[in-house]
Image (cartoon, rainbow, N blue to C red; front, side, top):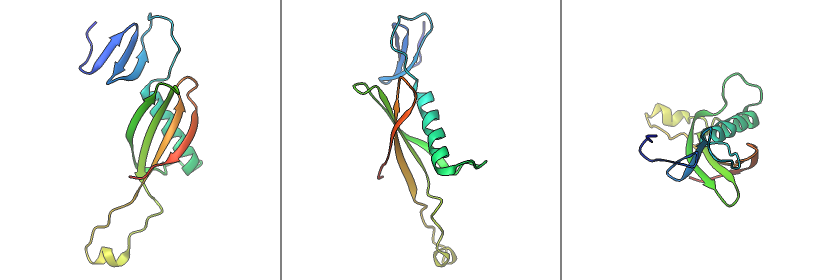
Length: 127
């Protein structure tokens, strides 16, 4: 079985740079964990629900994954998301003067239980 660069496979499990990706079928019996892609999806869904309610369009403008980490001792994913702060309003005088103001971004870290796939905690992060 040939692996992609940076991907380590063994005992029916795939890792990328030390981060658990997925359990392959036919592997040895082990504790099931959600993979990093699923953890990111859970974090985004949670953030959109908390900050956007039932809106059709995502309230998280220009959202992106900033950091991903796995805490082995706590069996949880730490997913940091960032998005533009929609409460920010351009200052008209700066706009007329041709100045480009930087839109502030919001950063949140989501702690996700890797076994249950549930958000345990959300905290602000300064960048």
